[in-house]
Image 1: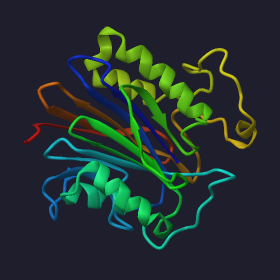
Image 2: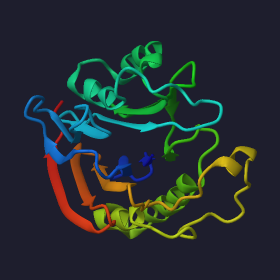
Image 3: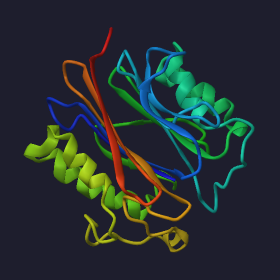
Image 4: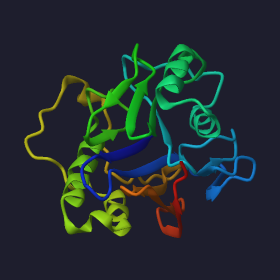
Amino acid sequence: MCLILIALGQHPDFPLIVAANRDEYHERPTRALHFWEEHPAILAGKDLKEGGTWLGVDRAGRLAAVTNLRSANHSGSSGERSRGQLVKEFLAGKLGAEDYVRMVAAERERYGAFHLVLFARGSLFVYGSYLSEPVRLEAGIHGISNGPLDDPWPRALRGLAGMKQIVTSAAVSHTQAYLELLDSRNLDAASPAGQPARDSQSTVPDLPVFVTGEHYGTRCSSVILQTATHHVSFSERIFDAEGAAGELREFHYQAEG
């Protein structure tokens, strides 16, 4: 499971803000955020088991992210290819976001059920493997987790409420504010009042923004800020199996092109 929160076009100085948690089995080998030796334009962590990644950017400021998908209606298969390859291949390639996501849609049966998020040249696309067409997201604050786009999980709703508070405050440029949101471990944190429960929510786990567990949980939190002048800031904090915070890595660069 993962959580991706995106503020698109909500602040004149920061047209793109991303805050995300990666959840994974603690035993799965991972390398922390770095510029890849074999693909020097890619800045991302790496899944050392399959060679892909869950979230990354490139030197041009393009972004890609993936979550798995769990739903009674869209269970999907395990797939012959790792979903992390979707992110890697977009960032390593030359296709535009819309062309790439349409290519992926035609090959979606090769992967387990997923959401793919792509940002390039000011446009944000999301594609779920249960959809016939990719969706171009309008300016706003969006939350993507492990359920269908039109039926967000409680965890995503909590994250969205917190994201809105930060983006509309003086803390909008402060990476630490987003990291604190992503480290929310109680179920009442930033929960929106009066949110109607949909029928499918009865089978959805009611999780906090940060997930802890003996074998599985939040492995890292990431914050990406892209300015109106195309400066990119990417921060990643890793966590151990007990949920204790570890190293914080930060990269800053001017996007090319």
